Length: 488
Ligand SMILES: Cc1cc2nc3c(=O)[nH]c(=O)nc-3n(C[C@H](O)[C@H](O)[C@H](O)COP(=O)(O)O)c2cc1C
Ligand SMILES: [Mn+2]
Image 1 (cartoon, rainbow, N blue to C red):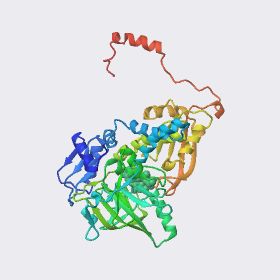
Image 2 (image 1 turned 90 degrees about the horizontal axis):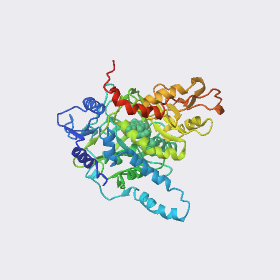
Image 3 (image 1 turned 180 degrees about the vertical axis):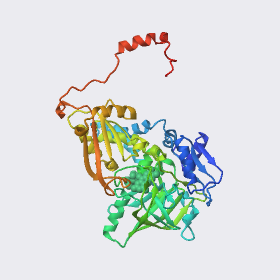
Image 4 (image 1 turned 120 degrees about the vertical axis):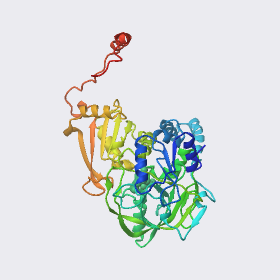
């Protein structure tokens, strides 16, 4: 059964001893970050701060900051279960005969059952306020010392494509400017920014309606982070993940819908001609992202539960909670990548590569130059376009094992021959890039080189002991009494 809402999931975590309540008063300014950072890095529990200084609203952090809790969030034993569900939907897409068509029907019906559902009322509107409200009531964190202020870090920012009317949900941080105004940090290539530019090109004086929902059952709360194609509803994908549709209610003052089970909703608009300095912010790169010009969100209505919880997350020096979210996304979307590029065997984005800096891909190479073809594919695949370094290895390298990758990849390259640079869009947060949003990317072809690729030598075999010797030694191993041998 899907979690009803955030508190339902917290109850589950508490039962599993995966939630710690903090009853000591702590400050949302820096202190909650310092505590959460230590707990995340120790693989510790989700945290419920019951007495954040200056607010009556409890704060939840580190909700899914371990793989164990991510599995609980998605109600699976392992992420492979979700991946195999994704695969099962991909497999039915082109039926060969009547029998296959008939077999497909239940799958399609199942898919249909994940579409978001409109409902009349929801807990997120138990309290509706159009006046006398202020963001100051909420325990919004200032995470790091040089941050420009307090930031909402885990919102579901909901907009509609002005051309198609299709919904987008994005998780974009929001700097609190004052009681009813925030920044809107949708980065240049993100769908929210696309909606903004599209609306602005029609009317610079106009507005783009925006709703921001915070706190929901975990699969819904993660909607804004999912890198789904433009105009595909993230809430549909959340419905698939939770195996139950996301229920939506219509906002009170804007023509948008928000999850009925949310804790807090901000309704308002972005004024299309308005930009304001946003930042700095201690970011998931482990460095501060500096000030930049971003749109401004004006809040005209606040709705919330009678007793709302404030869900937030900390980014900073890796690993943080976002690594576990990104890792789940990597596993769940791998079947989709493999569908488009069947030579891909596995993909890894190690925590220290902060997603956009490093993707390691193993491929089963069957024609010359294929590693470079895969790099180019990745640089044109949704948000993976921003990947600064793509490292391609052969199918027999375990990309999940960083030591094996470093060893084998470095042995496999002639740097001048095997490294390729391209220019293109890069992550807004890349502080090393020559310009914001534009710079170079590097592909490393660390596959075995073929004669067809101009390699004239003989590629050596990897060293492996033969099976007969191994089993002879296995048989006498006990006798040798070497197990307890201490290293000197
Ligand atoms: C905790 C967290 C904070 C994020 N903050 C931002 C942000 O401030 N700006 C941004 O563009 N993306 C941010 N992202 C990444 C986006 O949520 C992600 O790229 C998402 O897929 C964008 O949705 P879209 O493709 O619909 O634009 C953040 C992700 C996480 C996990
Ligand atoms: Mn999107």
